Length: 387
Image 1 (cartoon, one colour):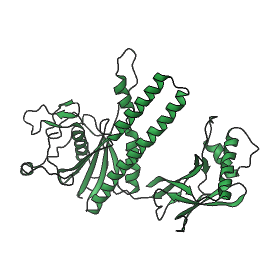
Image 2 (image 1 turned 90 degrees about the vertical axis):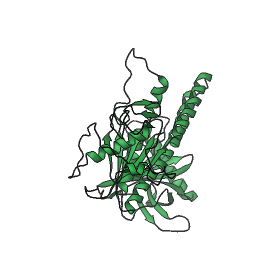
Image 3 (image 1 turned 60 degrees about the vertical axis):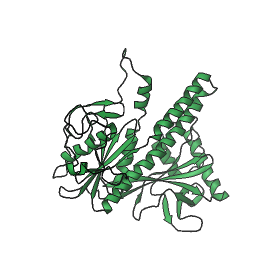
Image 4 (image 1 turned 90 degrees about the horizontal axis):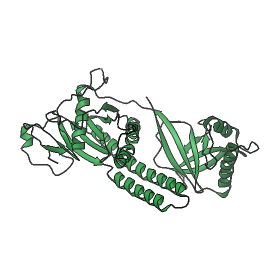
């Protein structure tokens, strides 16, 4: 399958001549988009502008879209930079070569796609979209399968747990700082609205962009950790697969005359579940690791041991079955285990996925292991701990 990835690169060590050429091309694009036809703009860049930009806002700058056959990347390992890029501009035959510093190395074999040159506060950045063929290997029925199940929520944006060899390993709760960031910037926006600050809408919009950047940075780091853990499991001889709960029906439109809590409504609607899912998918596929979604209906309301319907007491899941060996359990972790078990139950021999029903298999720890002491490290198998 073909997998795409965007590599963000900063343009470094620009000479005055090269900086002038890039600024002239960038300014010419903005003038052309805002109605001026008498500008010196490279013909291919003009075609790309007609192709991509249909609606133009008067106060916005638009990036320079570079056609894939005109952008060239070379690895030179010079003292100035490791990678160089050739960007087409008007008045310079063959384009201008610029030094770039990407956030990660380029693979050995790849294909360049449509890319963007962005100017931000006087600095240039090149977002290079690359594509390569990767064989995503799904585990067979008789292989040592390791499932990393991920439950997405509001309290803990990502709750992950490993299910392998019939046991539970390495539970982790990631992204809790996102709640603090969202609450902090929401408090600032409320204060601006109450004080009736001049140009309040402009300031609130700027704050929103800063909040998004911080949240995205945390999500990139946490999803990368999950994919790196899957790579480690592959090196240990397992065939890993990342299973993500598929959220559905959370963001419902407001019904007239039906009361709602504005605070909870804001929290639910600001959950970055889609962003987490897409990050996990493309990062896992880029490494040849499959990532799938399963229906998570009732996963947070069922006990992963006895499969009885319980109740949720804030962050705790309370099992109502008097014969069950657990009484209270972390609700998000219980949901993640149910998601992993549901996938394992319906993994067919022909490697196909079916519509996941509500029942799921129990991943139990043996009675002998229950008698052992609780492990202090997260790398060892965990007991059925009461949270």
